[in-house]
Amino acid sequence: MMMQEQSKAKQASIIAMTAALYAIFFFLSYMIAVPNFTVLYLPIILLGVFPLWFGWSGLVGSMIGAFIGGVYVEGLPFYLAWIEITTAFIIYSLNWLLIPKKAAEAKTKKGLIMLSSIYALSLFAGTSAILWQFAAVGLFPAEVAWAFLLPTFGLNLPIVLITCPALIRAVSPKLKTWGMYSGNFAEWRSLRAKS
Image (cartoon, rainbow, N blue to C red; front, top):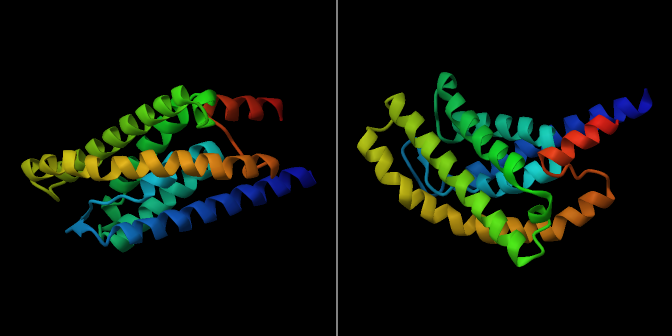
């Protein structure tokens, strides 16, 4: 019983911390923005590492942080905050599901290539999704939205490809020793099945 309470407390702490970090990174990103759209998307760094570090709790926290960023940073109405939430969910989920255990260690050349490919795929999918959603609800004309796709992707890709593997190598070992490392989706599921 005591172990379960600590686990719930740890999960709540992770959700609060990831939501706060996501909102802060969102705010920092807004310095390079056009009306209602953040071109430099620094939360992509968090969406690249949080799935491996925090699993389900990190996903919930990232979605809350995306809501906060959408409403309070980008100035989206509450009823359109789902756009940022959906984008965070897409990128986070793709990274969590697709990154294999070997690549998650970011130690070998093959692992880094695989990790980079997955980051590029999830970033492209997320960027496409948010621009499509913005065009669908009328925040941008479709031509303008699609004109942002490649520049936004190109600006954010080097950031995620450099920063995420470095963070994984530096922070993951410490999180493992603290018992906070979740791993990819398959690892997370197997850990839950054991407990």
